[in-house]
Length: 503
Ligand code: ATP
Image 1 (cartoon, rainbow, N blue to C red):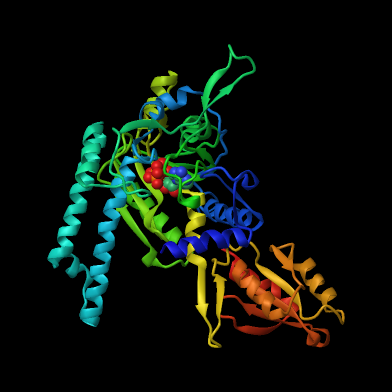
Image 2 (spheres, rainbow, N blue to C red):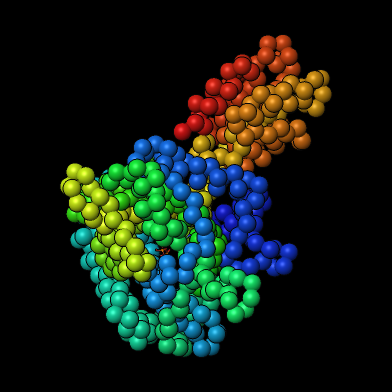
């Protein structure tokens, strides 16, 4: 697993997807830059989300709010007081960790044991193996699961009650060691606020303390009434946006999974109070369908329903994805009640209510939120796509099986040789296709090597111009995943590619 993750990171660099930020200065921890291919892939994921959420839904509109917001926003939202991580230091290594993550990692190790037992049993029982039954009846596995539940429940309770001494006690009882040095010499647990502060204004005296937004959602809440009025929106309706968010994350060793500067794609759906159960279910299903539509394998997703709820929520679930380091949160679906709008009413002194003509009364709407990290989605797509395939001739090929709709380059146009007028024809095809798709021209190296390069780059089609092209205006189109080749007319290329890459 570790090995796979390392390959993902090095492939992302080698093929121009993701670079460490400020690499020539030895980088900045947990900050990354998207390179020539990465920027395209990221944009395509964002567009795929925007199309599904905004373009395809008459009652959802998109906005683009500023990163800087009035500082009172973060008082009202609860971030100034409650957006904390519980941290613990190891006295010997002087390394700092998130106490909750240490405990969760401990539980993940037990979960690995469960998986091993399941694999062993599946092998032993063959076709007769029933996983559900095994999980609920095998003594050892049930014991493991109970242990996980007990630990997580106690941690949840301690954090909720701000009983940080008990979080430390739990770490000591479980004999959790510093993952780097093995030392078990821990300090007390302390709360640490994750927001980045900055200043607005020229002179030191008049400057105003600001935060870089830690989530995009608040930009939607404060604009709720403006959008509702100017868009003449009727409940239920949604406001969506994508944009940067900033968190001073402490556990920052998971590539683009957890960054200090990242991008969110969020949608707040405003509903009548009392209907949240129905809409919670609706958005859980709808968002899962969106994920499945990319064809990355249903077995790689699961819901995780929260028992411990944030201060603003009455129900919450994560869509988890199987990253190279295990199942982790990819998207959150939260029933936020009227917590945010009520808080902004209170702190701003402005009414944030909706007049419901059917009910003939005003109320503060309830909110259902879907919130997904664009960078995390990028990592899900990229790591799932990266595969090493054993070929019939005994060699292996590295192929990035990106969903075609998301691939940065849709087709590479290759002249078989650099002479006999073939480059000119290939360049002419590029000229024609580039109006509709991101395509590239490549004439360097033997055609087999060029195919491999495009496979590793994730390009779904290679189009090869050869001597026959001059006779009959046909080219060879090679499919990345099957490696199958077809002879097609140049004039049919656009439609063929369109069929595959259009949403
Ligand atoms: P986690 O528990 O992993 O820290 P969270 O529960 O704090 O995540 P939310 O506040 O619900 O996350 O944010 C919504 C989404 O934003 C997450 O599902 C995730 O995809 C993304 N996200 C949150 N923090 C980061 C980060 N530091 N780097 C990249 N993506 C992030």
